[in-house]
Amino acid sequence: MASGPIVIGFDGSEAAERAVREAGSVLAGKPALVVAVWEPGTALEYTTSSLGVDAALPPIDVRASLEVDQALAEASQRTAQRGAEIARQAGFEAEALAVADEVSVAQTLVRLARERDSAAIVVGSRGQGGLKSLVLGSTSHGVLQHADRPVLVVRAAADED
Image (cartoon, rainbow, N blue to C red):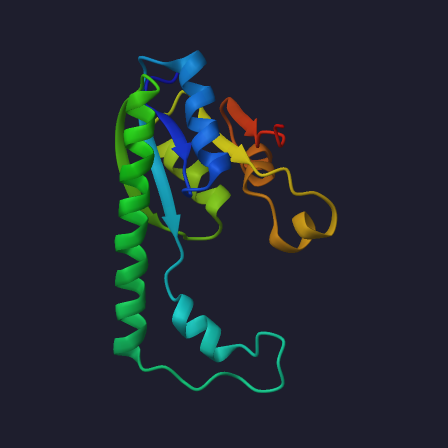
């Protein structure tokens, strides 16, 4: 039986906050690793692709790209720390981790869960379906497809009156 922390994917969205709180209602008292995943090389990628327009954006120098990566890493660390605070309020013994995306957010979360011998993975779902989900992909679906341990997917709350 896995003995590591619950891995919680956290992107700062309302869906992610709800997932942390709901998971706390059933998993409180357990250690948790709240993970915010960021994508390195974003600035270079956007300037070397056409983004669906006729011409690529002006080139960006390597130093500027590294500065963008540093800013994304720092923002992800702040996001992870905020998620860990929410997790502590929900009853977890939580720590924060910002990590660079290697393949996809889902596969990064699954890899961390394996490395940490995690008992489970928790993710939120924004409930996007149809074309939007097809184009953007679904982290929760990817985690379900690749995980070799229990996964708790918490759907976004329905709009309340």
